Image (cartoon, rainbow, N blue to C red; front, side, top):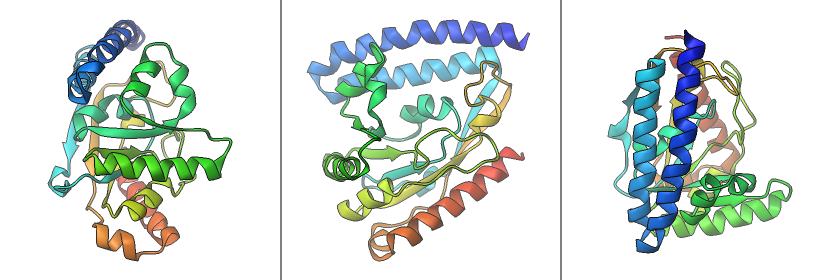
Length: 239
């Protein structure tokens, strides 16, 4: 039964995604927010589908930590679910992600049109320069910046190699950092076809204010973020 429900969800998702991508592209000439409405619609409908068809419910904790100003969100990366849910979790934002995603027909083109910060992994020095320049610009435009510091999805119970890109952007832009933990991988596994029913909790953790970000050594701050994100991720995985 799980296989059938997961297959039905995947079918609906792969029909919905190109349709919403086309709408994002069509409405982009009318401004960012006109396209953003369709990005949120894609996220909202997908979360509804995964709830109805796969029994996965989503809860959000810690929104009281949201700052008034645009900030950098550094989030755990376990599955596709957190990427899908993100437009429903935080205000309008720019993603920092690998450039290869732009090559996906329609979906990748929509990402590009929305001002996503796409980096080439093969050139770390150029990538960090690009992240700093474009990240500062997005924050100046009052758009949040979202990054998965591990760079790629990690299996449940494991920790990836945290990269400093998000910390560097925040320090250069004078922005706060909002950490986020979750347990999406326990219900929507990495590269997993079968979706398992249950509750996925997206938990925002206490904000690290801009002054603290500025005055803390980069590696120390990255280690602090890694510690709190991974600790709460393990707690949620064990619920």
